[in-house]
Length: 343
Image 1 (cartoon, rainbow, N blue to C red):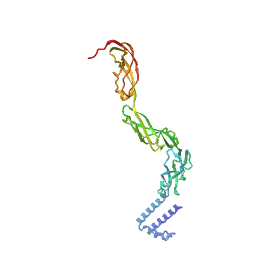
Image 2: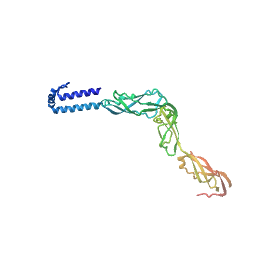
Image 3: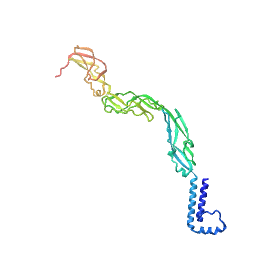
Image 4: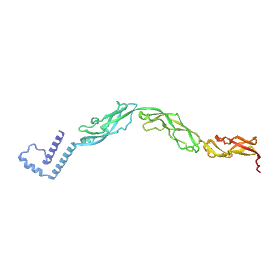
């Protein structure tokens, strides 16, 4: 109806431009020459007016024809029940296509067409929302012809707390010959929070690294507790103290073919076997420079000439312990002849 009215007005205006006055309702034969005379006057201006009228007619009719406009409409997720969380990747926008007059489509603002999804009735599991044209606020004479995606699937989980042990993260190496004996956190446990499916896979939380490069003594320092993942956070305790026990590396070292000396006698002697093997235990740094030659002996004080089995003795520095000696006794023959006295 509206299009007929516009076309009628355009026809009347065109006629007025041609005849230069009001549109005659009835034209009698005597008016023919008068009409022809008026048409011939200002013929160029009238031609321009006709072209403008035709252009206006096309513009109005083209504006009324159906056009398509793609739009990206934002989505608002509202009223999610307390204690629940969306764990899958949810879309922030929905793509739609609106059909209608170009003049109306040009006035549409996608942000004002916000798609509101009410989550108040969801529970753990999957929630499916069908997206229909009626969910978009578009003006009359326009309609939504395409929606992508046509449905939104949300994966809902429950937020859970769990207490897990704290593991102290150690970075670097102590000084040579030293090691980290233990690394403990105080308090020893923390509470993590997040979707249940992720929380149940968390066995412990790591502290921020404690640097031990070159350390020779125990370390105690405050550390933070970074979130174990982007889904799980640490909610307690607010502060943690890391205590590291550092000590020297204790190791064993075996010395083979150590000669056995006979002390505290002036007589000539013969030892069988002349060499033994000795294993000692102590700090690694001290063992690396240890030399036991001249430290293995038997004492023959007050021992008469003859054949004797005597226990082997070993002189060891402080901090070094004897593990074993093979053999632990040697056979010593003491002769009656005296040793030559060196001058």
